[in-house]
Length: 242
Image 1 (cartoon, one colour):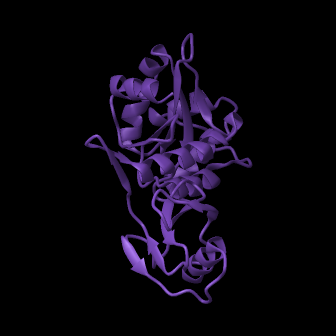
Image 2 (tube, helix red, strand yellow):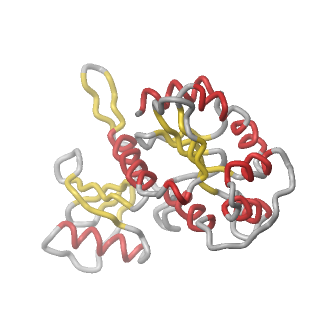
């Protein structure tokens, strides 16, 4: 997701609290909300380092803060054991993304089930006007054969009221979403029906979890694969992440 004008792209920032609170949770919230009142804080817990607290934002993004709220850090923390680094921040963010994506009802997606046994699934933020999304969609039958269920969410790259947004709304309002999705990717005419649909909500959700372009492939563990990848590589990663 895009953070604030003040937080985005900042690795380390020194900020002042409006008033030092007795509890770290209150002090940290006071600082962050003074910077961005609408910052979607989900929870605050002790971080991986002494004196550092982990701030989980809705959608998965992680910030770190000192107990008094005077220091805020946006960046990765690595733990090195036996010479092998583990990105603790990425691990926590992926868990948050997985929680967010797994909460979406199947009825709000366009789902292409696996053929036979479902061995794993992927969730794809897509735009029917995106050439690489079209290329990925052409490989969906191969993914299905390999036991991978493909779940589509809408992400009109140019935002609400764009051609992609209108096409995706037509897909989601179709009686047969699978066929409508495939027809759109093959540049066939799909009747533009109107209905209540989740396209704009899913676009906002994509921004919240960090989608910056399409296709954006999310594995079951919340790992995000930006851009097109061939079916064989996707299947391998999906099976490892289930």
